[in-house]
Length: 300
Ligand code: ADP
Image 1 (tube, rainbow, N blue to C red):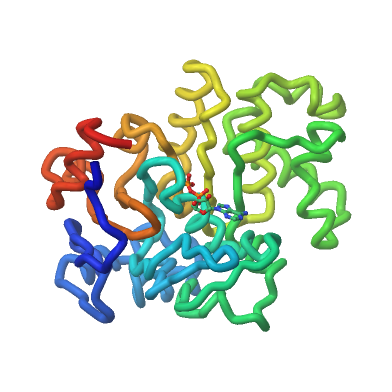
Image 2: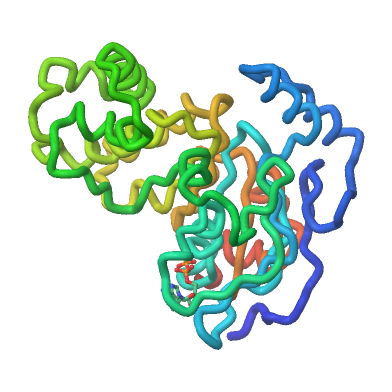
């Protein structure tokens, strides 16, 4: 049964945010731009300027001759949780990896189009990719702690960036572990190997490691797929706690999880963006039949 075609179909926009049309701003999006949670004057200015922190414009990605992303145009709202859903192989992880140039690490990848991070095109070859990855952190499907102590795992990015002051590191490690809801469990064994932690703790440790370098965006690629239900709930709760402070973009194959944790959801199919909008609306009143078929389990 072919439910969808790869050929260009209009993307259905079901939220007040600008998605498909360049410059199509609405009064609601301007209202959403109010910099309520901005932590610095620069952040306040950026938020006032544009409620979306990342905007993909006609993004195509090719693995060799094979087109994996077919002209994605969408915005990721600042300080909100956006979920990418769709059947396996539809391009969710590929799109996520574009947002901090992780696809650069794969041979024979070519992209066209643009991805603007606060207005700057991050596909520019001259971009400082190390700085980009500090601003846009990533948490993977399988947590991969380094074979180092819990403390050193969290301090790692700061040390790489040249921070060696002990008090600064101590403060950052504690703050990051607290934000990742792991401090109480590990505060008495910071010098022990991180490899001794459980799977759920590993994932929170990796979130702490990402937080330590003060990112603006945290990308999460199926962060709960290897976790038991209890650990999954902890990560979902944590995403809820981090919302508002960070922009979070999560890939999940679990629609219930997308519905629980995200503010906005984008449905992808065969490399194309089919529909994007406020999560509640997308799951209760999808605008496209393909979305409805997917969320009701008719395919995927
Ligand atoms: P999803 O995350 O939705 O499961 P992916 O982004 O992993 O989808 O994959 C999208 C398409 O790109 C698939 O056809 C997949 O086989 C292909 N693909 C993903 N990674 C690579 C790679 N490193 N090399 C070649 N093709 C890839």
